[in-house]
Every structure is written in structure tokens, then in C-alpha cells.
Amino acid sequence: MRQVVVMAHERALALARVQDGLLTRTQALATGMSTGAIRHALRPGGPWQRVAGGVYATFAGPLAEVHRLRAALLVCGEPSMITGSWGCWMQGLRYGPPRSPEIDVLVPAHVDRGAAAFVRPIRTTRMPDPTFWRAEAVDPDHFVPSWEVLDEMAPTTHPGRLPMAPTARIAIDTLTRTDQLPTDWRPDCAQPGGCPRCWRGESHRTSAVRNARALMCEVVQRGHADVAELRREVETGPRRGSALPRRVLAEIAAGCRSAPECELRDLMRTSSVLPEARFNQPLPGARGIFPDACLPEARLVLEVDSTSFHGFGDAPARTEQRRARLAALGWRVLPISPARLRQDPRGVLREIEFAYLAGVQGPGAVRG
Image (cartoon, rainbow, N blue to C red; front, top):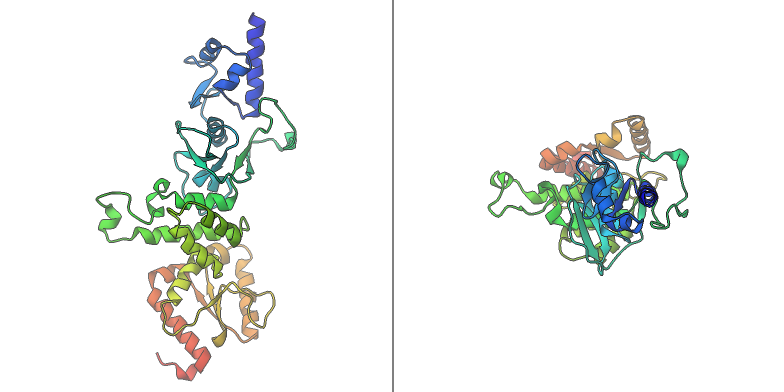
């Protein structure tokens, strides 16, 4: 009898190793463990610990990110995948919101899963094909091909390899579920009586728009998804909460590839002098140059001088070379810092208008 108990326990541990040291109560029973054996393993000071909703860790001590993510997937069952703020983190997006206390998990609409501990199931009729995240702790020398079955009780599972939604879906899921976002990501105040920001006269929408722009522009700029993929997610997803992503999508479709570029486009469209600028399109008459924005009528290029892009490594040298080439081609460059764009928008607009008129009418036609 004791040998049977030991074998069942070892079988449970073998399954848990495939699942990053975790397993469900149902799986433990299926390996032959009794309810008493499970209770004994979970005793105070015992080798196991409860994690969430019938999911156990077969080790003591703190849980790492991979354990929390695996637990969320085990709570929701197959097929399921991570989305939301944790999905942004898994995709390596720098401009996603801070990870929420709860992990958002997509599950099919017919699957009835209630929230458990730090797990928040999201039922959907639009289950996408997953992409996969690999934990850094996985030993590359023990890499196992994804098609190899390690355990018949979890045939699609490999240690440190977790399913997540495609990046476009993650970004739109994150932005449309506004009730789960931090204050500076929500277009409206979540407090019925207002908050200190409201009392100071600060707009929630301003910061929400800026954050949505940064996230969606990063997705496109880094090649995680294109405009068509983002548009598909916005059009097929819930209408509620989609106003902000729709606005940003229109800006990205117009060529903007960063939040400051979107702000520059907003500012320029308030002018009665300036035409619509070309954003991130090939420079007329030149090959291989895609300026942030240009006004061809005035042969004027506008460059948003973000330190994160222009200020490190060999970027300053490349920026200098590009501007020298533009000058040789007869184009003037007007650098614009994101900080000044936000602190002195009227001054920036006035400079752009003067530079544009000088280019169109000639320097002598413009008077300060």
C-alpha cells in the first residue's frame, strides 16, 4: 500500500515538473493521490502550498512570475491564454501599463470559469491562435521542441513555455477594459466625487490618450503587429471602451509612430496656415529617407527629437548624417523636443508656421 502511495506521489511530481512545479487538484487525484495524501502534502510546514482555485505548488517558498502565470492558466484550463497588462509585460512592451494584481486570461465563451485569487478569466467568442512566452529561467541546454509530448496528462505543456494572445489582441484588450486600468490610463475619473487630479483641473483624458498612443505606436514600431491587425481587433472586439483605440488607430494609419508624433499632428491640425503633413512617408525625391514629418511645399522636415531614439549609441551620429544629407538635398530641418511640444505648444506651432511660410513664400515674406 505504501508503495502505491509513493508511486502516486512521484507521478504527481513528474506531472508538476512539466507545469513549472504546479498541478491542479483534479490532476493530483488523477495520478492516484488520495484526498488525504493531498491534505497531508498541504499541511502547515508541509512540502506543498495552495496557490489559487484548486491549484497547488509542489514546493515551499515564494512564487515567481512564471508560477503565477502558470497557475492562472491551470485555473482556467485549456485552451486559455494570457492577455491584458501581464500580456504586455510578456511581450516586452515598454509602454504597457503596470501589471495589475490580477492576471487576465482569455477563455472560450462556453467555458464557465469564475475569478479565483489573482486570476481574472475573460470569456470570449474570438479565441485567437496563441503565441508563446518563454521564461528566462528555462535552461537553454534542455530545450525541448514544442511538438514533443512530455506528459500525456498535459500533452501541450512544456516548462516555462506559456500561451499568450497575439500582441494586437493584447494591446486592444488592455485599452478597452478601462475599469481594470490605473488612473492615468482611464479617460474618465473612476471616483464618483472626483479625485485630486480632477480638483486640480487636470484632465484624465490627456494622460489616457498619451498612454494609449505610446502603447499602440510601440506595437507597430517594433513590428509586433501592423495597422491591419490592430484595426481587425478594434472592429471585431467589443464597442465599449474602444473610442480611444479607434482614435489612436486613425493616427497610426496617418503615419504617426510615437506618442509625440501624434501630439505634433494634433497641434499642426489646429493651424489655419499649415497643410496636412506627411508622417513617416518617403521623402519626395530622395531614397531611403523617412522623416518623422515633412511639408513638401516648403521643403521642410520636422523631427521629433526623442532622447530615447536620438540620444544614445550611434544615434546622434546617424541623426547628424541624415540632416547633412537633407541639407544637401535642399531641405530644412526643424527639430522639436517632446518636452517643449507639451510645455510650449503655441510657441512650437508658431515656429513651424514661420518656417513653413518662409519655405513657401521666401524668407523676406515672413515677419515676426
